Length: 75
Image (cartoon, rainbow, N blue to C red; front, side):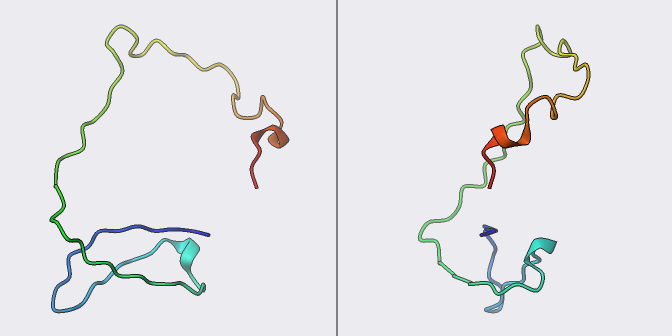
């Protein structure tokens, strides 16, 4: 099951959303919930590494194929 969660503003009783390609040609269930309290529009803080370790990591080789795919426990 794919999930797309959005917070949108209703204008003239309408909401228009654009979904990712993975929803194309699929049946979807649409549930609309009105929020009781206004959303806090606090800006998201950009995280960055500590200056002592920033730029110190070097990757040599292919790190994704070092473990067999069966060990990832993916469906």
